[in-house]
Length: 145
Image (cartoon, rainbow, N blue to C red; front, side, top):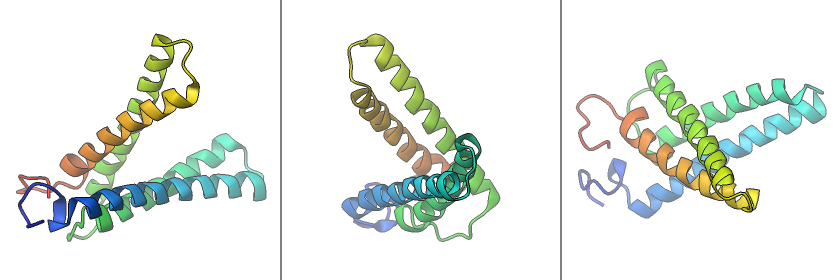
C-alpha cells in the first residue's frame, strides 16, 4: 500500500500489518506467560506478585514490538509514548473483563471460554484502535500512521 492510503500505517500491506499486530501481541502474551511460569515454578514467588512482574515485562515487550513491527514508528522510544501504550493496554484489559462479565451475566448458560473469546475479540479491536490512533500517533500525524 502507498503511504497515506489510510489502509495500514507505515506504508505496509494491510495483511503484513495485521500479522505484525497478532505476532507482536502473541509474543507479549508468551513473555507474560513464561515469566509468570518461571517466577512461580522456579523462583517460588506467589502468583499475585509474579503476575505483576510478568505483566510489566509482557507490556514492555508488546510496546517495543508494536512500535517496531506493527506501527513502524521511526522516532526514538519515549516515556510519554510508553505511558500512552500502557494506558491503552490497561484500558483494553478493563474492556476485556467488562465485556466478559456482561456476557456471562446476560447469558448464564454460556461456556466461559466462549465468553472469553467474545471479550478478547472486543478488547483486541479496542487495543488496535487505541494503539493506532493514540499510543503511536504523533503530533502532525492526521491519519494515525
